[in-house]
Image 1: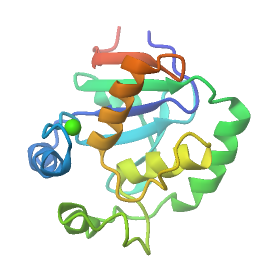
Image 2: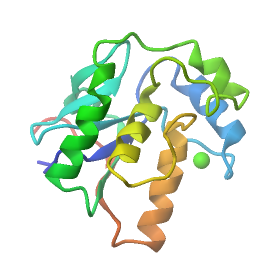
Image 3: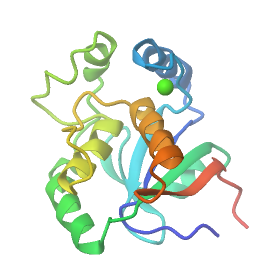
Length: 174
Ligand SMILES: [Ca+2]
């Protein structure tokens, strides 16, 4: 069983029919012209409860991604205190509908500048990481691929900052 901690972050390739389209849009803007993950979120408790922007922003279960390729990472300095403060700061989005209208903004590269409402999945992860003090990025305008690329770079070159919790298909329940 994978040991999860509050504050663990993930990017996942889901079986959503939109996943391919989302990855195509992300690859357009990515420095490496590639995108493998279409969704992102973070863990709020060791039992696998997540906070994510799906059809609504809310609490879900990481087990719904069993069978999907997933990269789960942990910031070395994500203390319970830092996580709680960051989580409290983004909890205000709980229950909001998914802001589909932000997709075109991402496609034309304007999402970083225009954000009067609430975040898409990766922006929610980014808002939490910003509040926890791990990134200067506000989170607005970020994509799942942005975080995947950033985390892979950190794992490669700054292994003390970030550790890999899981980086393959999430197995079926034992
Ligand atoms: Ca990429």
